[in-house]
Amino acid sequence: MSFPTVRMRRLRRTAALREMLNQITIQPSNLIYPIFVEEGIKKPIPIASMPGYNRLPVSTVVEEGKAALAQGVKSILLFGIPAKKDEAATSAYAKNGVVQHAIRELKGALGEDLVVIGDVCLCEYMSHGHCGIVENGEVQNDQTLELLGKVAVSYAEAGVDIVAPSAMMDGQVAAIREALDDAGFEQVPIMAYSAKYASGFYGPFREAAESAPQFGNRRSYQMSQGSQQEALREIELDIAEGADMIMVKPALAYLDVIALAKANFNVPVVAYNVSGEYSMVKAAAQNGWIDEKTIIREILTGIKRAGADLIITYHAKDAKIWLNQT
Ligand code: PBG
Image (cartoon, rainbow, N blue to C red; front, top):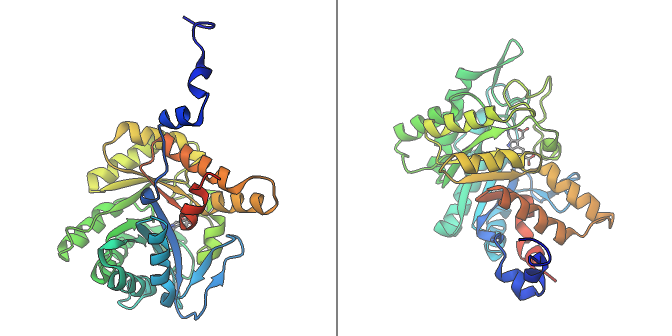
């Protein structure tokens, strides 16, 4: 049977019909809102490459958490910018580090209403900007694992709800799980950045977090763009090591990987709609070349349709505004 018996347009005729048949809706509660918290500043500092986004003093994070909740967003992902960087990333696991401080503030004020996630990595805290300990010009995998475990435990001590390791070191999920369990934090879940590709889309983030590598690049630990099976293997390993959720990052250029992750595994799939993806939308919108709200809805619907259960996105803060169809 085909035309004229079949007419696909029959089900598209009215808004009510289209809505009735809609399969994908964006819910603010499925979005995660990333923020940058900087040690030692008094006022928010705008991030030039991420219009509408600031580096925040710890004193403003509770306000940010409340703003997120007012949008229906339930979760914040914390990135820290320390006052001091060194070659052992000591500020990353300091008891009074900037992220640990922010966690305490948020949990103290908002308790169980807000899910606080801490990004576990070292690049923002290392003077050389790499995600692990560097010796002889190379990032050392196994020595780095110990530090990542320390960071996770220090976040847990501060009261974090979820830890999210993003360093792409082999065995990082197992090392963090073990460190958490040994310290009595067996209830703290791990959201693993499992399939994290080496990407040009992280550019604005690195400016924001001052975390660009001072030499070389991240290609010896982050994934190569042309690989698909390798992503499935990374995810499989992370689940075996104890990941409670897995992530694909970036989102837009890797929608196939999101779809494969969803089809192959029974854990929540998280997609990271990264800084460069955000900045491109903002830049085009500022020029009047696209309609910002329409584009944000379309992008996030696409990421969800590909298979993402949760989306980390810088657009989360204005969810109510762009979700409004008018
Ligand atoms: C830390 C980290 C990065 C991002 C999230 N965690 C930067 C990087 O790997 O260089 C990027 C997020 C974004 O671009 O929005 N390793």
